[in-house]
Length: 446
Image (cartoon, rainbow, N blue to C red):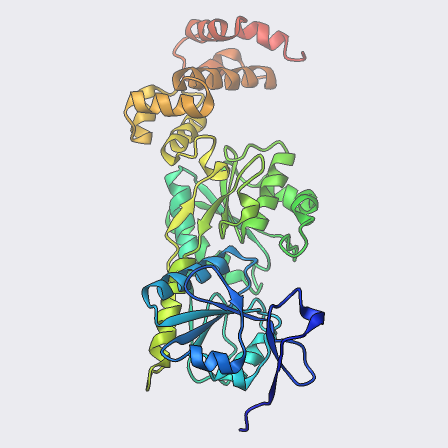
C-alpha cells in the first residue's frame, strides 16, 4: 500500500498554543501525539523524517490509556518502570479518543498497550488498522477484532471477592454482601456477586446483595449525594442484618453507600462496613474515608510491556492471557475504624458483640493478638479513652437502653446482662450512672 502523503507545517497558528511543532496530513489538523523517554517528561512529536532517524536502535511502545482512572495511571507507571530497565525502548503516549489510524505512524511502533473504556470505543478500529502486537488491559476483547497478536493482561476480579471475604472474616463479621449495578439474578454482572457469595457462604457467613438499579455515580457524580437518598438503598441498609460488611462495585458506589448509611444514623464501620475497589481519589477524603482494594496496575504495566517485546520479536506469537491477583487493601475508616488497625478494630467489634456479658481485657488482647499494654495504647490513641473504661461505658449504655426501652423485669435484664444477683446488677448501674435501675425505668420518658 502506498504511503500516505504528509505535509510538514511549522506555522500552524490555529494550534500554536497546543503544539510547538506538528505534522499533518493534507486537509487535516495536526496529529495530537506526544512522546517521551522513560521519565514522566513528554515532548511534541517530531516530523516523520526526524522520527525515522531517532528510532534507529530504539523501539517505540505506544500507550492508549484513559488517565482519569488510577488503574490506567498505575499501568502507565508500570510500563515506564519497565522502559527504565530497557533503555532501547521509548514510550509514546497517544490520546485515547483523538488518535487516528495512520499506517505511516504505525510503521514506527513496535506494539501497543491499550485500555478502552467501552466496547464501541473508536480506538478499537485504530488498533485493528495498525495490526500491531497489542496488549489490552482491564477490558474484554471483541471476538471479531482482526488483530493477529493480541493478548489481555489485567487484574483478576475473582481475587477481589476472595480478598474482601478474608478481610471481613478477619474483622469478625458474620454477614457479608455486595452492592453494585446489574448484579442480581439475570443481570449482566451477576457473576461478580455470585462468585463472592459462594466464598462467603463457604466461610459460614450470611449473605446479602443490593442492585442500585442502573445508577452510576462515576458518570453522574451528583448521585454520590442524591443516590444516597434512594429509597431502595436506604431500605436495604435499614433492613439488612447487622453488623454487615459490604463490598461495593467501585469506589464511587462505595462512597455513595457510606453517605446513605451515615444519613440514616447508621455507624460506619460499627454497623455497616464498606469496602470499595480501585483506591481512587473519591474515597480518600470526607468524614468517612473509604477502605479500598488496590488494583495491581504497576504489575500489569510491567507484564504488558514485556508481552509487547516478546510479540514484536521475529516470529513472536501472542502469549496466553494473564490475570494478576489483587493482594492489598488500603485500610481506612470505612472498615478500619478510627484506628485503621485491623487488630484493634477486631477487638472493638468483639467488644460490641459481647457488650451485655461484659468483656475483660484478657479477652480483648486474645482477640487482637496484642499485649495488654500495646492494645491499651493503640486503642487510646485511636478513640481517646482507655479500652477498659470504654468497655464499661458501652456496657452500661446498652443496659440503660434495655431498662428504658422495654417492659422486661429488671431481674431478668440483670441476668441477661451477666449479673449473678440483683444487688450486683444494681450496684453496677448506680456506680456508673448515679441512678438505680428502678430510677432509670421511672425516667425513661425523659
